[in-house]
Image (cartoon, rainbow, N blue to C red; front, side, top):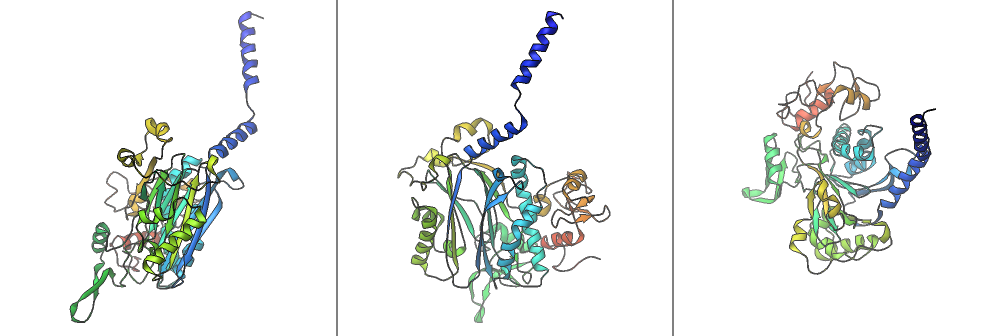
Length: 435
């Protein structure tokens, strides 16, 4: 045997000795994930007046079945109006509809990247199913998913989610869809065929906030409300952020809180308290200032570094550096990620609020749709039913957002979902189908 061949064999043997069994590698990765994953502590409090506020707290959801290392938490508030039916239905169905819109076999990063689109599909499917029941109730929905340090929030209506960092900076993670305050939404509703105005009483005097007619709803987005018109859309505003390793506090609440307290006051009034007491304190302060004029519900969620798992988030210093506050939100940057992780900087991963489904559902091809649709050649991107090739209608067909796309590219919609999309965009009267 030549010396060169002997060296090659020794090199191969040396490499085999350094190989790590797959099971050991998975175990090592799981332990690393557990070490880095923050703790989540939460509290909830409420005072009822109409009995139309509902909430959801679920801390044992799994991205991968039977794998506890893939756990994520869900927190949501549904503020119903014109009855509780829509709020109850949404609480019971929205999460499953969102998860059904996510492809199987994704890594964590891929799952988080696909989540904003799945939230849009889940919201619209929930609205479509509830309206098919023929009930006229409606609801807001503020839906929060916490997976490690990543927080994803989707909302329609005026139930709000705010973020309070350990540095004392408060930011809204949602947008209020109130016609009174949101100029863009007023313009969208009127462009889609709705009328916006105040309630007119005897003598032509206008009173109260701006409303959409018919129906008189103050909101421009909600789930349900089939009696108002399809221009009141269920397409959510979605924002996804990554917290620093100092964590942060989320306050999710119905408008019974926000009509009494600003975001800054709500955060300030409960700093230094553990989550359960913090939620009670926010409700107490709202009632002290305004009284019980509406259902008032609050969820406080603390995302806590592992080494501080038993401690409430500390009160921030009294003086804040202006430069620091201006850096609270940074767009994703590989160069800055490591440096910013040591201070209370929030990395913005995604934000989109368009009401146009063609823009929100993006683009896709047949292979992707088929792979996620359970065997059909095409799958409806909203209701997830399998479609024959002749049945699938591209979400981009006839859309002003499809100038660079081909009309046969996915994602695809079934006929019912396509009719709903057209009605939401004012291309067809609500409830009218093309045969």
